[in-house]
Length: 310
Image (tube, rainbow, N blue to C red; front, side):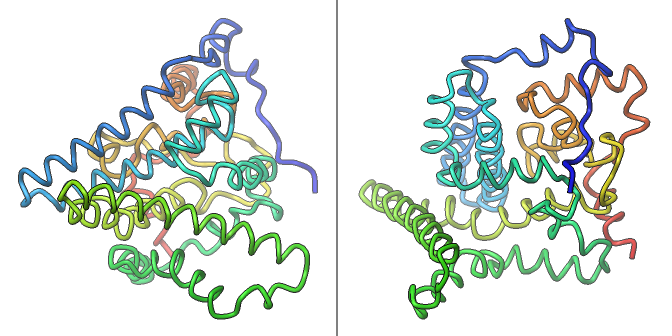
């Protein structure tokens, strides 16, 4: 199948506007990575000082964990830093070690967005669903069942069956990649736990790093996926209708949608824009009246209502 139709920047922006939007910054992406880790550290300190605030800290940290993934996503497009080597090194070591596997997968998503070859189509295809079904999914996320299914169950299955179950070259390669990814994840967390234990704060790592990853992160990942493409038409000929932008207030940005991930329509339209330029692109499109033709929702609650309209 042909690639999904693309938008032409010259149809929406002046040359001066496009030059400003696509300018590469040697410091902005690095600052955002530092900001994500700074917020995580501050939330941990707040949780240690005022334990009653731990539930809020878990939400904040889980959202910044998503934020690190979003910044890795920018790096997958080569947008985190103008130096490609530094772009990849920072993303791999400070955002997510899944960068190398994620990049080809994600670029295929952009190439075939909302078409049969889109690897993310399975995430949006089931919608709309019932409200009860959505609640069950969110409960599984918050109770850790999703984390177990995604992180622990495949690992246990591979230990049980071994490599003997992989008979083709492709299956063997996927098994090797998954084992390597699991190894990086568990070794990294074991080292983190060791460092915090040596400092006398083992419970902080479990409560304010792993717990957000086990419960809050899967839920915000799910809501993000729903907002971006659920109920967006398959095989869309109009690039303005291939993804959704969700307008987010400061509470949603703090607890659900970090680093302008809510401007997903703009990201699909113009993949050359780093995340910090997406609000500016949206403002220019709105001023030109273009957003009236786009799929835009006023907030995440509105998106969830739309997703449970069936």
